[in-house]
Image 1 (cartoon, rainbow, N blue to C red):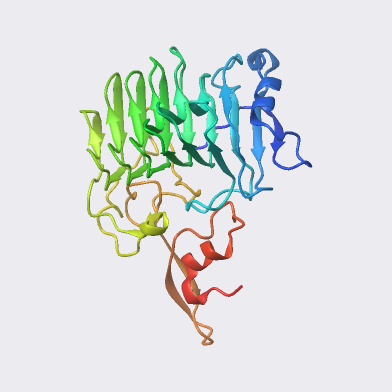
Image 2 (image 1 turned 90 degrees about the horizontal axis):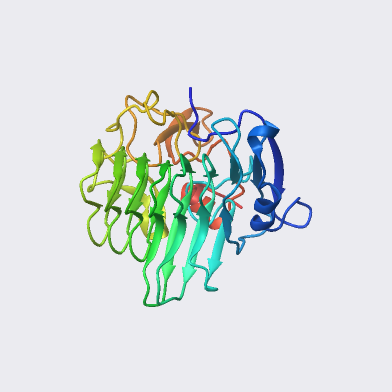
Length: 341
């Protein structure tokens, strides 16, 4: 079994959040851990806590000496992750201040995991939620994140942008409602696996240079091409997928869906990036075959009425590994009239 979330062989753990945590700034943590991790034989992991509804932060991850065993990770702490729906978990929301990129990840093997990341721009130039701009960077990982980019100015807004001769993996991630493209690659080597890329104003996945492999992805309802260019493709779907409540940004699979459920390819032994979980740690598959997109649909048996019996109820992986602390509105969206405060 292989989780999509990679961790160093051995690592130091720091915390981010309110005043009781080690850090209140991602940039300060980055500077403090910008070391030779290989010689130290210790990676660095930052566990983020939802002590606030959201955090206005930017960070440039660059300069540490890393390898496949010792690298840096920014992630939601255990018990603090999102539910697969924006508005829950650890949220980073950055408002315009002249910085073009919110999370600039330019370091070998660095990973960003299980965060909700939104950039709100008001600029005449391009704005990027996550970007790789340095050449020669190997295996950047964006895993289990919910990513959005809004730019109310004349400029464009991209969820993820790779403009360098580097390699990256985006896995189990939602790229949604960006002003321009969900994902844009003009150079480098990209692997986009089991992602959901929807409702972006221009292209969903825009392949303009380098090499790109797209597997098990839902790319649907985008204003331009759902998948632009000619990347290598394996079992993707661009229409007909039914979501729980797209109007409310809930892109978890509906129980009525037939376009994505059980239509995917098993990537547990993938040559580039093997894994067997989904956006909220549900093991794939839950039925006969993998589902396409960031969410593996799950049926959960729960008590019904006062009969003491059990009925099968559609669940959107509410019982995830994270057990997220959800606001009332999000819980009611899952459970409807059965949910009580």
